[in-house]
Length: 169
Image 1 (tube, one colour):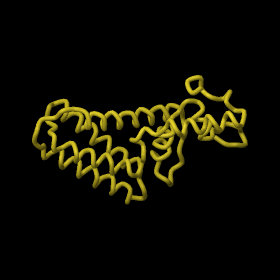
Image 2 (cartoon, rainbow, N blue to C red):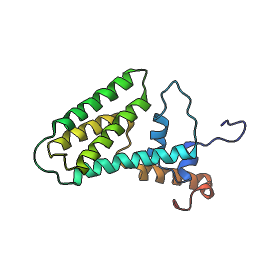
Image 3 (tube, helix red, strand yellow):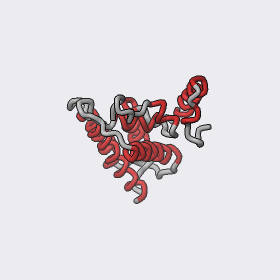
């Protein structure tokens, strides 16, 4: 993509096409800083699915009822995940590896919950690991609507609203 070839997108363009800022942020952060991003719409779709998977996991932890007690394996998993995220970021800001660590935790924790092995005391530990991840990637809070609205207002003022997705207007 290049500006001279006319085949580039601004962040505003992508939001006006219906893509959420949190998905864009996740996609941009998925590539270590010394690596060039190969932007594709399928990659953006995968980023949106990843963000939704994280939000669904957070929702499950905060709304599901789990039996009393603790599962030491999940406590260890939560701490290992925090350690892996920290190590990945200390390793030349390897954001892709940090993302892989959180999704490994999500996969294992969901499997434990499905097998009725998750307990009440495990939830805050897993949420803490998720929050540590989100302190860096900032995708869990669904705060896209005000940002989208500001971009729509900008597009109206600039006369570029015709570029917007029908779902937005």
